[in-house]
Length: 244
Image (tube, rainbow, N blue to C red; front, side, top):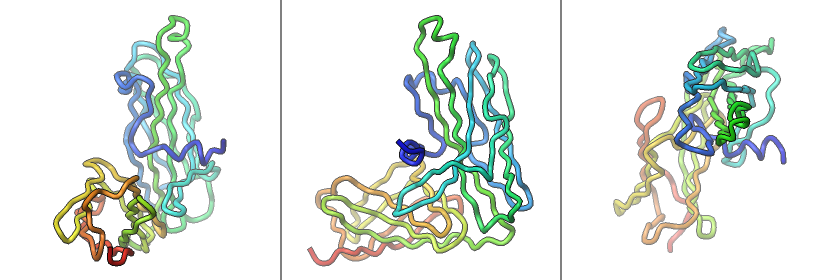
């Protein structure tokens, strides 16, 4: 299995845990890094709220989007320092995220820092449940002059699926939350109240509903309502479907 396929499930600001009740034992702050040129480094603070030590590994992946999906590949031009650390109980530790490339930032560069809490040797010895926590922190390096996000929306059906696509003609990302789709009859599809995802600069992001909602007419234009890092979103999604 490739790194790309292993990491496709990673989402911003969430944890993968084997026991959700233990998810809060490792805290990472902030949940997002945005660094404008000439700044070439930022910091993440790791906090171990457990009563035993925590072994944590950090690595950086380059983040892009292809065919509407997030793609992650190993990064060499941005590194985490140190890449691994053992946190004593109830302590904080600072990890630096450094852009080591000497080339100027091209528009906006997108990365994620993958923070893994590894199974504890102490818990293994005590036969306690081992917990793996993975957090994914978005990191953006931005040039001085960046074209703002400019997003257009389309809607299409693929067999029984409904595909909503955002195309960003700008160079800056747009963070989308509380995404809703409303048709001309006033019927609404909600994609949840939390984070829906990011539309990266010069990229396309798609959201797929596995089945076409019963009675939801997708002919004509659809209203898009959402929240973003640039404020409220109110737009029209053009449907590629013809008469039904």
